[in-house]
Length: 293
Image (cartoon, rainbow, N blue to C red; front, side):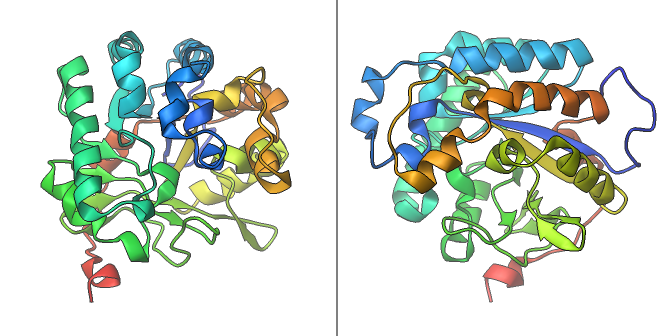
């Protein structure tokens, strides 16, 4: 937890997480930069990661890092640095292909390859997974038994919201058991009577910080919360690609002010890892029937 241990929050924690990928690997870039061309791009993940690790060290915060296998194989020293600083290493798949664009066989191969890479580099068992683009949904629920099969203990891929590319809008917001693993969902927050996602990514970059702060305080009166960020969101000098109006907005909005807002966030709230949140959870509710009827 941070050094500022005043009652900044209620008894309900916030788990802080990062999806470690680079600017050219994200879903918004798929039509502009193919995976075959990734090696030609400017690898800049270290820029955002240096800021993140320094900021967390200053507040003595430990977080969960869902690391892309492709990044781990090219930046093993970065993975070791994250681990050596006491953070949790978790898996984000290998190729950042959303599950809805894979078959069960290709997903299992991709996930196993990533787990093997991370465990080889860290010498530690990997316990957690987050799918690229939160792509565990009703139509990809077949992925959950595979995640369990490969020895993972929790998943944090379901976003309880509506979005064109992801989301299970009415999924429970508490940690639950699905297919033998713990599901740690991301959720919307209630602000001024409306349900709005404020828990990270483009939502955090777009919304005024005071709005996010109020929403989180409201959330923590009732339940635990998970927040997520990406290293490229703290690299405002990254290359610009013309993705079209909507995708340009999604990817580039708020990059210039995101570092300042993030520093306010970690000063105002306390954080834990997802692993610690899962270990402390006493909710044994099973929801297999939600997907597997």
